[in-house]
Amino acid sequence: MGIPITIISGFLGSGKTTLINQVIKGSGLSPDEIIIIENEFGEEGIDHELLIHSKENIVQMNGGCICCSLRGDLLNALTATLDVFVKQGYPIKQVIIETSGISDPQPIIQTIVATPNLQPYFYLDSVIGVIDAENIEENLKHHEAMKQIVMSDRLLISEKGVTNLESINQIKQQMKEVNPLADSHVFSLNNAKEELAKLVLNNQLFSQSVDNSHDEHHHHHHDFESFIIEAEGSIKESLLHNWLSWLMMNYQDSIFRMKGFLNVAGQDFQTEIQGVNQLLNFNLTNRLTETYCNKLVIIGKNIDKNEISEAFQLVLAKSKEGMS
Image (cartoon, rainbow, N blue to C red; front, side, top):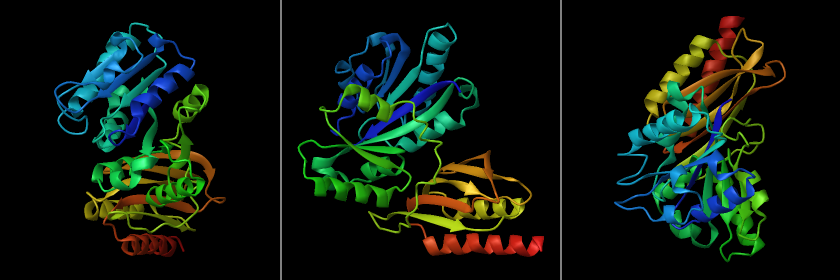
């Protein structure tokens, strides 16, 4: 599959660097087997001095966020990693990207997933979002913090003095309402380093199934919404493409994540759909269409759940008419 890339995201002061230090110590990997790509906003970075790795393995990008002015540099950093380390036979087994506290992970994900030259060598394993339990309400007032949560595959809630179980459970529920694709775990420096490493590395969460997303969510958090479409039946491929084109055209700046499995007419196995903004990937699975129904999770901002669901049901109905 190539070398796994793990993105560590989280708002300012959430504890990303501390988490990375613990994960590295508990990973069982030697320093020359991990590449850290660190992004700091501003002229000079500070956090790189806190990382326990050798400087040769840190690629730090100053002057802006990966997500905006330095998006091209992310590709350059990965290409340099490929040319200097991988192709020369260095035993690289893990890449970790630590975003700045105000970064949007979305274009970072798109760069990794949509760059053909990287595909034989790297794959996106997981997007990990770090949540500061003590300051969560203040942080959620910021669009960047909400976007980081929406784009995550797993959320690690740093207790930071919040030990009340009821408060932690409320945060977990709140996170599930914002992003039903992500699971949540509480962590602190008291956790074993090996336990943290297992939570963060080599879980293939970005491509995991959506079968665990059972609940219907339609809650407002600063206009962010998530909901699940579940329906039986098969969809004609041409009508599916029409529906997706309509969806992307009408919600091109509003849908951030989309993941699910669809029954395409004429195929014995379900098609997996994985969407990050306008980037859509399709893969044939080993899931029999006669066993599973269509299931699609959509996360976005200012989206009309009823309009999208009704349009999908219309596509199913037209497909059924065409096949009868």
